[in-house]
Length: 243
Length: 158
Image (cartoon, rainbow over all chains, first blue to last red; front, side, top):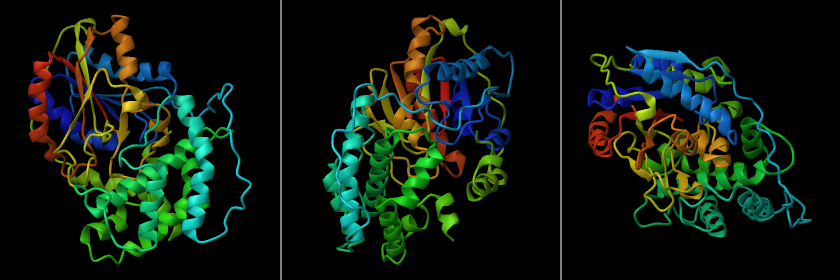
């Protein structure tokens, strides 16, 4: 990020940046940077709080008023650890599935879980008017079937001719995770991003499925698949907590 | 929340081990422009976001490819294909502006706090190593920004 600012500025384009890792910004010394004390993934602090985001944006833009640089300033506000629960209004989860969780094969558990979460995901889409699914172009059932094909080791294939199997697997696992996160985030109760992550990796069949795929593909003859298994499927923090 | 001391030990170690590998970039370029109320502002993010249907980012494309996001993009248009699994996605899923603050920027333009919002914004996938890989595309991007009369860029990491 700091290097990007340096090169754009060298071409005559004035830049200001948000910095999430102060130590990196100190080393690179870009022209103007605002360090923020927010979690990785949230450079403007608080989702759903336009006022907070605007204060961060204005603080970054005000660095253009400085007469000389490099400038590295700290943003003074902290972001809350816990996301406020979203107000569902009169939207309610329309279906419940009285199925016993945790029975059957892992693939069957995954299918059941995805189906049950579908009701919550529908609420999430209605509430927000958007979803971040759609990178793969697969429907949710197709996505589950594709992930299941890796679990069942029916061949390391892609779902698109122009996407390598390793990249296809990564995108599918990420999209599956996005589906779970979006569904979970509208269920009652306030929670942090870390709570959602912990839930996904420790309590869901999907989390177990991706970890199992990771273990299986660690022995893949495809170097890209093997590299993905080493560092691209399971977050470092989750990985370390298991070892 | 997250200073390095707040990160998990593996994430903290990963961030710290990068510090001595970062290059000393030559000089301290410093470009100037008019008052904020006259500036035309673009956002350049390294969050690996793009329009649904765009080619997803793939490993190896860090810093060497970018995607174009028109100012008219709708919230439902944007998806993320960043290769890293080590940062929060929940915030972006709830509200894209926490990563790519286009709506607050438009509000500032309406208030005349800034001059205007650029017609086009850009997205790289970060986690670039070495960071000098950005140079060619950054210089290419500068020409597009100049053509769009942009005189202020907000760089947003993830």
